[in-house]
Amino acid sequence: MSPVTLLTGASGFLGLEVLTRLLERREGEVRALIRGDDQAAADARLATALDGLGVEGERRRRVRAVRGELTAGGLGLADGEADHLAGEVTEIVHCAASVSFSLSLEEARAINVVGTSRVLDLARHIAQTGRLERLVHVSTAFVAGRHRGRFTERDLFVGQEFRNTYERTKAEGEALVSGSAPELPTVVVRPSIVVGESDSGWTPVFNVLYWPLRAFERGLLPAVPARPDGRVDVVPADYVADAVVHLLRERPDVRGVVHATAGDGAITVERLISLACTAFGRERPEFVEATPELAEHSEEAGRYLPYFDMDVTFDDARAREMLGPAGLRAPSLEDYFPAIVDFAQRARWGKRPLTRAQAREALGYTAA
Image (cartoon, rainbow, N blue to C red; front, side):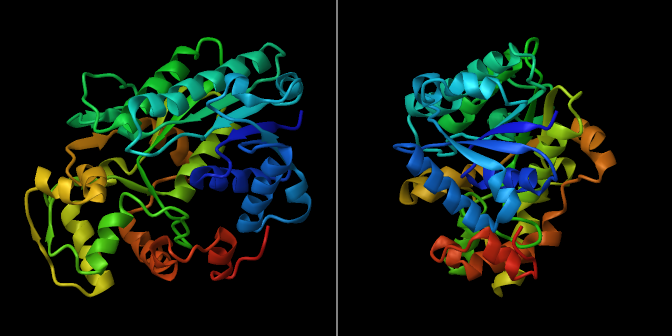
């Protein structure tokens, strides 16, 4: 039976990376859940995404937009669409989420918890046909919140506090998925801070790691408000997408949680700053204590600085066991740091958007 994948979040950063890999496969079709006022609008959004990915020809014909909305009852599917999907879908990848750190708890829950619940409802409907072989749920390693020490792939709620509604609601959504495990073939993938592709550097979003880098390039960080020995767990988007697709297709036996993180290889703040000094030709700054006043002065600082003052290590023992034999390992940030900085500068830190196709064309790749 040729696989048919229902993909949520197909127009988001990680969703685009997953969609590309699914279409690079020689077989299988994709049903992409896309928001839109009507089917024509959903089709147009998908077409724009495929144009940006450089997907053409036969591969383009293997993906269809399904108009839907995570926050709507029944995923906002048209009449009869759920039954139609139940008759063809064999696997689900749930990438859709709100990654905003500033939403109210109610707003974040509507997407990350209620939306996940509705995806699970559809998964159960498909499972009743006997067709559902796999459900991959993309969570985040930062369900660890402010936990200190090692956070394993078996941990979820360990008494931690959360920095924001994003972390809290992703943990709540993951708990729903874990609770469905006896009846659904689920696996949860937890990435850490996701940055651009390790070869092209491509990314359509410039948050978290990119904010302090841009500020440092512009000379706006004469002092770094973080501990030099703080750990910054960063992974490139291609590693995470490769892990998702591998667990989807090659390891359907794996259940539970897999960390797509740097783990013990996470870089220190001090080493990150050294890389930035070399990249931007800046003098080494001093390290100072982060203060509440700094967060009040800068909205971005309040959102992102907590991720550079962490005492957690994301234990990735299962990831090394499940992904390592396939050659999937998180590369060292030092190895691809020049690529992500080069792309960020060419894209003017998001002010001059470049598509994935354009980024890869610069490396000599042709359209898929």
